[in-house]
Amino acid sequence: MLTSKVAKRYAQGLLDFTNETGQTAAVFSEMKDVKKIMSQSADLNKFFLTPYIDAKKKIEVADQIFKDFSVSSQNLIRLVIKHGRENQLKNIAQEFINKVEDINGVQRVTLTTATQLSKENLDQILRSTNLVKAGSNFDLNLNVKPEILGGYILRVGDQQVDASVKTKLNQVKKDFQLN
Image (cartoon, rainbow, N blue to C red; front, side, top):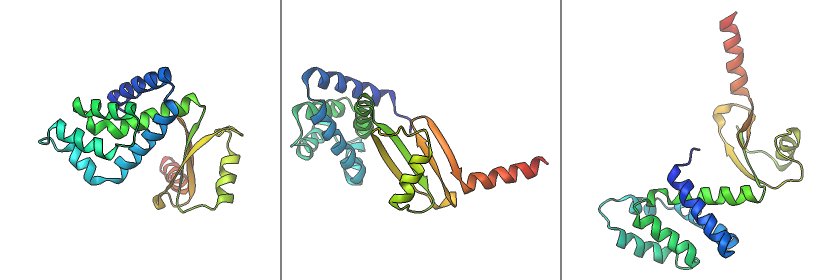
């Protein structure tokens, strides 16, 4: 997923501030909550995206929703809304999470399969590749997409292993068309 320059800049500014004030861990947890809330609430997203609702009203609602957050997180949310960037709030939170995880050496791993996997199969796939560093921390995101028919697609950072049946069938089809 491509992240906008706006989200990257706000996230970097927040990271710089929290590093200076020693609040990175607390704000990291709160940004995970922001991402979760924004992902789960379609009504909140619609409210924030409504152009005829003024920023003051949006800030009042945000203050109520995020009232238990630290002052730093609340100020960031207010600033984002004040500047008309509330549509980027979820992306800013995700980008901040990514930056903190990068600093902490956490790998982001995405595994796409046709069906739900057992713990044993999952561990076997992760051990079978040299993309996932042994003994390192990683954030695993599992996706189930029946359209890949079988196998898996493993993505670690900017590298990908596509061992899906659909890709293999497409390759066979392409080979037949060439010959």
